[in-house]
Image (cartoon, rainbow, N blue to C red; front, side, top):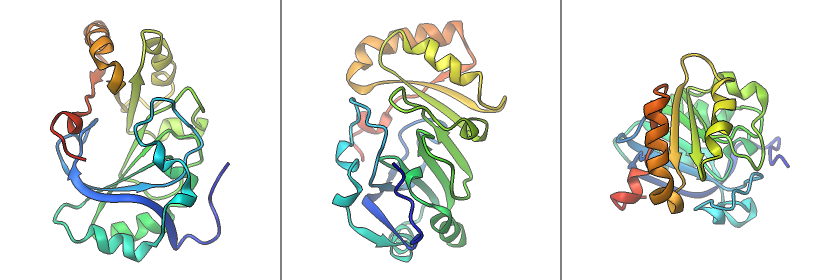
Length: 206
């Protein structure tokens, strides 16, 4: 169920922090993460289940969110969740751009797109399919691999994104010892895909 309301001057923020992007195309870059509360997807292996209930997190004014981001020298802002597209993100991205930020979103795509994004990382989940119109908008398709059956599922989405979309396979963290060798073999046979690792977990940063 969508959490979008007419009041887009505040958003439920679970946490916001400055770190190194650990995954996907922008891995290794300094980034300010804005993690919004609320999720309607509910992956059983999610490592931030505390983000699911938006009512548990403070509503922060967008100007306050921007003020927090500008305290750091990096100008890459990554909006994530939860599922950030449950919220109207137009004003957030407008103010981020006005403050000189590059805007990235990490989303399952399960709700219609809002906001003006420089980079869209679409990570579809089996628990709630992405909205079809979001697929051609993705700059990056990042599929979490939990078992060997997920490769065929990943290909169904690779066939629906734009030709220039970057394609990543990422091992589910708890299953990484088992599935990472499978992913490596799969990429060697299907080189349109690349490997994404959750590097931040290996180097112990948020």
